[in-house]
Structure formats: structure tokens, C-alpha cells
Image: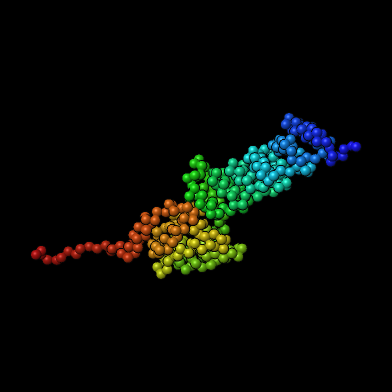
Amino acid sequence: MTDTPDQKPADALWQYWFSLKTSARTGQWDVLRHQMAYEPDHPLPVHPFLIDVFHAAANEGQSDIVETLFERGFALDAETLRETLTRLAIHHTEKSGDVLRVLIKNGAETEDAAISAAAKGRLDSLHALDAAGADVRAGNSGFFIALYSGQPAVMNYLHEKGAAIYHPAVIAAQYGRKKELPAEKANIALDVYRSLVGLDNLDYTALHADAGGRPEKISALREQVSNADGLVFTRLQIAVRAGKWDDIRAAVQNDKTDVLRADDFLMPDAAGLRPFDMAAAQGALDKLFDPAIWYRAPQEMKKLHQALSDIRAENVVNLENLVADMHRREIGDILPAAQSFRLARRAGPRP
């Protein structure tokens, strides 16, 4: 009785798999292709010899061999696939792109690979992962890791890909974790981040001008304006996005009948972002906690101060000094500067 392809003796299959392993270990890729093509009916299951073939071929960018393995029954657990994809992303070469595509096609999870590439500044890997269909943003994690690792080029790239640059963890990284950023890259990373925030809000500068420019009253800051997409914002929300803090301060100084409220800065705008968070993202907390804005409503400023814990920035603003400065301004309103005066000389002889 002759053996059918599915009834090959174990020794024959073992020898076949061993020959594939030998060719892979010695880098004889053309020989390996011939061996695989010559015996197309031989199964290629998960076996230690074939796992060696898989890793060797993947590391050397032999995507057609990797694909043939999967087509003929080779299958790996999710953890091994994920680890292989991540390793190739970190040690990316020109030959890796097609292998990444094959791994992703066969179920490899991509988040760890994208995060690792972002942390290492591997822009080439991110391009390859993107071309292979991966979410290079890794949800909300990729941009945060790029900022935290001090990788400006990756930050720019992920911003182009629509990364969530206002995620609370990203904003908090500038304050609570700032000292943990790589010292040699921290300033560059934060400068890039804030330039991206500015770029992200260019349209609001024009919208601020179209809304009437500088508001004269606090009530005007609460007026609503629609942008080109039909989203509705208050003029204060637009002013913060546009970085027009002088306009907010001027409206407060001109209006002696009303005060700003903490909720003016803590209420999310139509895009889901609080002006408080935008100020933090801009690195403008000193402008938000300007005593000239709050000295007539200190209780509101204290409510706003409590929100600093949301972004681990409690130590950024010195509350004691701020309150003292507000008291000085309040006294200045009650006791305006005295008019200059001169003593009149009394006529006649002295007594």
C-alpha cells in the first residue's frame, strides 16, 4: 500500500521539515523556495523546525516564504505574532514592510508594535505599519508615548494621522511628568507639541476676528458663534483657542458690573474640549490664573484652581501668592491713588 500525501510517514515529514530549517538557518532562500514548491502537499504545521523557519524568514524580510507557511497551515498564537511584529517594528529594515503586511493579514495585533516604534522614533516602521493597515496612532497611546519619549518627528507624523493631542494624559505629561521627560529632548518635544496646538487652532484666530474682535463686556464673551462646520462656541472659548488672552483681560477690566465664572472655563466647547484644558495644552496656565482676571471673583478662581489636579499641575500655580496679589488689586479698586496736593502758604505774620 502506497502512502497518500496525508499519510506520509512521520520520519519523512520530520526530514522534510528539518531540510527546510537547515536551508533557512544557512540563508539559502532560493533552495528553501524550491523545497517548498517541490513538495506542495506536505503540511506545514506549527513545529519547532518550522517555527525556526518562520523567524529566520521574517527577520530577513522573506515575505513570500512567511506567506507560504501561513497558506499551508502554519499558525502561531496571538502573543508570538504580536511579539514578532513588535520586534520587526523596532528593528525595521527596507525588507520588513511586506513581512509586516503578511503578519497583520494573519491576525497580528498592531498596538504594541506602533507604540514601540513611536517610543524609538522609528518613523520608517510607522510608515510601513500604516501601509500594512495598522492604526499607527495606537488608539490614544502613540502620541503620548512619542511626547514622553521626546520624539518630535513622530509627534508631527501622528498629528498628521489624526492623533488625539488633547487627551488628558498628553496634557498632564507636560506638568505632572515633565521632569521625567528625557532632559535632552524635553524642551524640543514640548515646543513641538505647543506648535501643533497652535497649528490645530489657526481657524479660530480668523473666527475670533469675524466674531467682532475684542469684546467690551463679559457678557459678550459668553455670546455664541458658529464656525464653518456649524459647531457653536462662546466667544471666550474661541478667544482661548486663538490665544487672545489680552482680549479676555480687557473685557474683565472694562466691565465692573459682572465677573467671569469658573464654569466659563470648565464647560466643554462644541469640540468637547474645556478652555481650561486648552490653556494647559498651550502652556498658558499663567494667563488663565492672571490675578487681574479673578481679583473681583476670588471664589471662582479657587474653584478653577481645584481643576489643576485633573492634569497633575497643582504646583504650577502658587495659590498663596495669587490670592495676595488679588487682594492688592482689590484694595487698589477701593482706594484709588490719591490726587497730588500742595500746602497753601498762610498770609500774614507768624504767631
